[in-house]
Image (cartoon, rainbow, N blue to C red; front, side, top):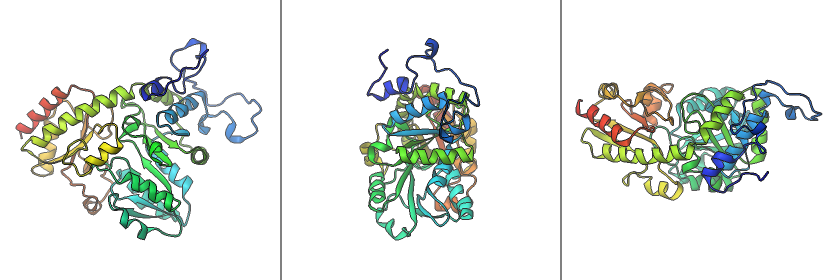
Length: 387
């Protein structure tokens, strides 16, 4: 049988990694809900078929698909986005090592770096992603990694990603980027020279708010090293969750492109509304990183954040008046989700840490879903006018 292949992202999302020939003719990949598999003479421990070793048929299919859609050498799925982040960094860093990290990060990542890593003897310095001239003075003899996010959570900013790659190559660092907010539809890090790309697959890659999963994509030699660490730490993804992620991935392109379009319409509406004091969306021409986004990305994404005139009380009352977006943490699903990061994704930061990161308590983050753009704008308008 001829193998189903294609060069375009939409085709890879459907066919890359799928079994050929189809297993018993099943169009959908079956769930191999077996913890262990028959021994067939494998000579290496990590070659044994076992869920914790991340090499069941469900894992293998996902690994091939994820690598294909970012045009990378290899990929690995994990039990959560934080498992992907923590395992990757623990595989690359040890006691006495040091990393540079962007100064505006997801709260869970920030907590890992400032609360847990010092206990392991791993140091971190935070850098302004838009000031490459300030990075070199923060290098140390044992700096090993530079870590950034494609779109910073929750301020919707882009670091100078081309400078990050060049800086990493010049100083022999491993470049790691959390690509969750952009997704492979809008940005593929390996094409721009990043060594590793991380995802919370809970978000856009799965897209249905019904599993927690993570992924690491990039250079094969690094993926192998991270996989060995993951086998020891135990953060493997269950085969049923693998199945759901594989199914969710097949609609990624159509979902994200719809979300790109809707988010831009909403951002333009909010930008013009007198009740809005500040709006952060890369597709707006006045955003300081708009030109960079146009150069790097195929779309501006489905995430935006904004501040109403007033304070936390006004923000909370506005969220409560909405009928379509659900007030909940997380993002990237088919339903629109709205949250105040100071109370959810960045609640683990102290008030002083949020202030340093420029995350106002009244900041609202909106993850645009697949609802009608007109219906969402009407709902937002009604909630603003009632304030």
